[in-house]
Length: 616
Image (cartoon, rainbow, N blue to C red; front, side, top):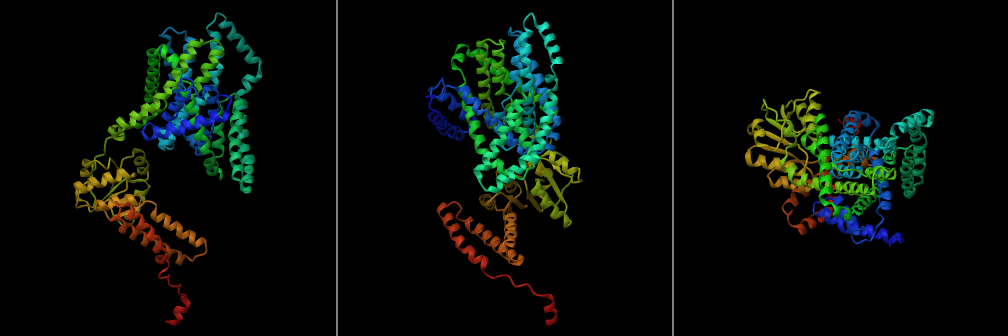
């Protein structure tokens, strides 16, 4: 079957389609689905595909593309802002993990050089698993996402000195180690290529920066003007491959090249088009990578010493979690964020296969040791989605992440208006009310946001709006109005239900996510609410009508007519919201009435002031 490439591709895709949706529906996540597909079709399953190494090498391009897309969303100044995490988390994590794992392995009888190579290999984490988790949870811009990215970037750079150190460690175990190291040192001084490598890397980065602005962007503009979408997609793929090839030629990680290429185009006007065109390729290739990992799990090796391998996997994951949790604590991250980052990076990574393979080639690792450690690496990747599942189902619901590290403030003021949530939505409402002289008690549960707004002289109390004791301390029972401006559909409803249950006499104004959410609020007796994007979309529609030739007065009239019609539809459809057929019929009927509503009573023509004055 290996000679029939079409059949191989069909099997890979069919296994993904069969198992990944099932894993997703069962709440296990897509990564476990891909891993299960790899086990099913691999050499230890149905044996439909047996060449896992070739599959993995092809799929590793998905990691390069993923880092390219991450770079597109990351401005260069953001990287500079992350420098403390890069040094404090990334570099320290590799050094500490390598040393701790080495010391533990030497206790099992391994020679120190073999243990050090294994320690360095296992200190790497899986970029594919970690960043896929970050993307699926939409936490790329959070502290957890940025810290994970910082650590992974350092690991991508560190793979080069790690690979360079393996030949030295290979001879370090022999009697000729000292003479060989001296000889290598002398050759390094005599060979200018070795000490010019750092300069060539810096020069390549500067050249890429110049080429990105003065060569790549004009070419992208030319391709975009042709209007050929497939040509633009091909250009995007060529850029990713080219960036990876350049860094690989310099002896650096191809993934690092993809990331640098993305960063250089982060402020380009073509960023979003590149992202949308390349995203499908990234998803397929990453899925293929996870399948290859599942295929590479040598169950024959696992069967020879299951307890020993299980001990190695559990020990590795536990050690890395403890180290990562401790390092994240120095950066004062929330307890839940520390737990999440420790779990996401607790596995060994794809570069561990490369390090172990080179160590075997250099004669440092025996074949049996290589096979065992390869199984440990693959199984450690399997533990991550399982640990994330445990975290989501058992730990997160019982964990008040912010309250664990930041107790609620003592609220020493009682106002007639209480605003729960001081994000973007709550700030706009508050500014309008304050401009009219109203005083409010502001409560939010994000310490970072509170610290930021306090620098501007705004006093915000810390606390969870869903807690009754906090609302009591804020004097909600004596308030005239409570504005629920927290984010999240379920969270808004939870706060609203608490308010209705314990303080039914207090008026509530709430933030609604969409029409269905507005109906849920109406069911609680809340009639003062606003859908998040409703008015902004109407106002944008009015501006578009002006751009298309309508007068500002006519566009405003049409916008207000549409607003009135949709609000009426919201009220009318509330009564039939549980009857799907009646609800759909009402909405379809309203579409026919919409045109009549928007064309009735056209706005009065603007009056010429000079003419009106003469008439008077």
